[in-house]
Every structure is written in C-alpha cells, then in structure tokens.
Image (tube, rainbow, N blue to C red):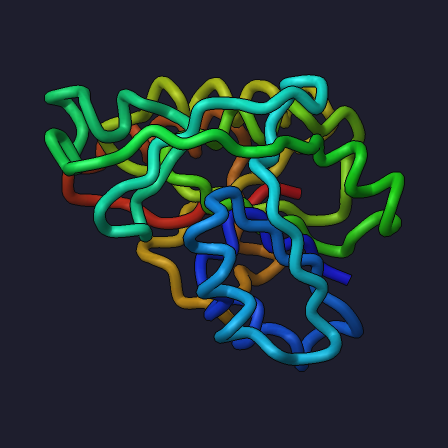
Length: 204
C-alpha cells in the first residue's frame, strides 16, 4: 500500500497502482479533488479530500492557485519574491485536515509515502511520528531551509539515507546503493540552482 499525499488529479497514483495493492490518494483542495474523482476511477485507489498537516484536525486556510498544480498551504510559495511562483494568482479557501499518523491508524502502515504539497512539506511531514519503510517528498532549490527542516525531522524519526531525484518521473525508484548520508545530501542541495532545480527527496 502507498500513500499519495498531494495527489492533484491522480496521475502519480495511476502510474503506480500496478506496483502495490492499494493507494490512498489525498488531495487538499475541494476544487482539485473534484477533478481527481473524475480522473482517477481505479477501484484500488481510495480518494480522500484533506490537507495533510499537523493541525489537530482543525480546518486551515488553503491557497488555491489559478494553476492548481501549485496550490498550497504555505502562502509564501505564492507570495515570496524568492519563490519561482511569486505573484501567481490565488484564492483563499478553507480545507479539512488530517495527520499522517491518523491515516496510518485508519489504513495501516504504507510501504511508501509520497508527499508533493507545494511548499507545505514540513507541515505535512511533521504530522508523522513513526518511521515507515520509504518516504519521498518534493523539494525546490529556492526553499533549501524548508527542505533541511524536513530532512532533520525525518533523521530524528530514524531516516538515515537520502537521495535527490531531479524532477518527478512518477515511477522512478533509487537503487539501494544510490543513497547518501544526511551531510552529503545537504551539501548537494546547497549546490543546486535557485528557482531552477527541483524534484523529490527519497528517504529510508
């Protein structure tokens, strides 16, 4: 079983469903969730409408971007001049929330957690309090501080090996010997090009 957190319209889930018996696909925006329901009709994919974060189940303000691919719970993602999406039009909406721990309680321990929540990665990851086999989350070169906070949090949960995937080939998996230690992965991230490089960080 996989968790697909930040599912958008379900392309990652559809690309990966043949690699597991079930995918729990979670999308925060009610607007995008309706597109997910219409696009993702595989019976092995469970669709949920929540923002995944450590907010004790309380509703949050969510920033629905004009391009729903960059909608976020992190306002700076769309308003900071350091972001590649600076000044992208958005509307404030309200979203329900759930934690990763609660998802595990309801559906069981996944083999993989994929997190792609457009600058809200730390809020999402910090709702997890136990190590799972494999986890990946999106990174962007201009938000290295956020990425380092995620890596440090995961290191404290027991993750010790990390891999940088450039861009987001949906079915990519790093080999067992491709991972680096925490110091090496941070050095590699420091040397990326702001507002240009991005991808997924794999953690085990």
